[in-house]
Image (tube, rainbow, N blue to C red; front, side, top):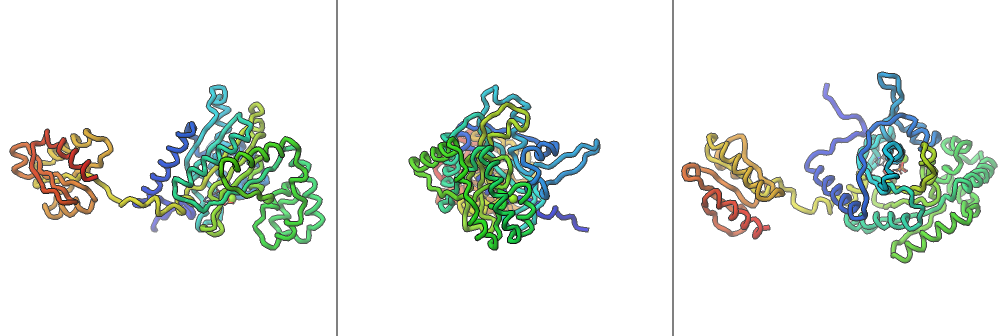
Length: 424
Ligand code: ATP
Ligand code: MG
């Protein structure tokens, strides 16, 4: 039997892994430049961490979680998202007392969904969470940071949609209104929406079933039930975004799938990925810290789907040619192995980011040179019999017009350095 990976859980293999590294590096640099610190969290939590925070009537908790009993009979869950575990960790480690209020994480998430393009069972997110800043200035800064990320990825066609869900009190009132409206039109609801009706009627607004468009369009708008402070918060956010030149659209139907959101919610979407068009989603969740046992604390965050973003930015992330080496070292005899390995070490010691490939595995001079060429290296360093005897090395430029030269090994390194900088 051939062993296969689990459906919806993919390997990321070369050459594609390099695009992933580039994307991750680009995000890291930007997060750093906004003063965010990385937090590394376990892939598994006690199931209660997710049940309590995400909400037990959401799709995630009802049908998407990988939950199992471990050998002690404890219920554990592979994380379907990062926020709940992050809040748990922030409280457990007292990070707020230490003033670590701006955090980010990266890693795999697990949801038992129907696998398709852009939707997997193990997928990757970068998430950002900010605590104890009530906004709306920080809401705007977070959104501006995502805009900077898209620019860095060369993505110019993402659209920002915004909405406000109001305070928890406003939502509670609105929920009753919606419940009454959809109950009165119960016969038009699909089974999904019927299931949402009793527990969380707001989620019906989120439905992607076109048959419900008209019914949803006729629902009383949340805006009518917003309290003054929610309205001021949202207007403040819209004003800052307008002044800073971030384009957005207010979408009153945007409610987000998770229960813990309040006030600001937003999504970045694209038309280019078909049905899986949301690449980044987030919002404010001022009630969550308290729900998980902390003091009432303002909080806002977002998560972006790396598979979808990397797919969108594929060309830009693969722009450079895909080479393995800058310098390729070969020898004419297996007895010189120690010499070329040491030479490689010395060259790496000169500049840590040179990629130095030392040929291993023998072979004729011709086949070694072929490999050197295929590696993409600028220079081949050759130790043949003469070089072995007099402690020299032959430097052969593999690109450009320069002639090869044979130099003493210890001074040769400076020559290489010079050659490489002139070539590069
Ligand atoms: P969707 O509406 O696509 O199911 P969601 O509302 O469940 O998204 P979130 O929980 O907000 O998504 O996750 C944030 C982002 O993570 C999404 O916008 C998306 O880019 C990505 N994402 C979510 N689920 C998956 C998945 N199963 N496979 C790949 N990416 C995903
Ligand atoms: Mg989903």
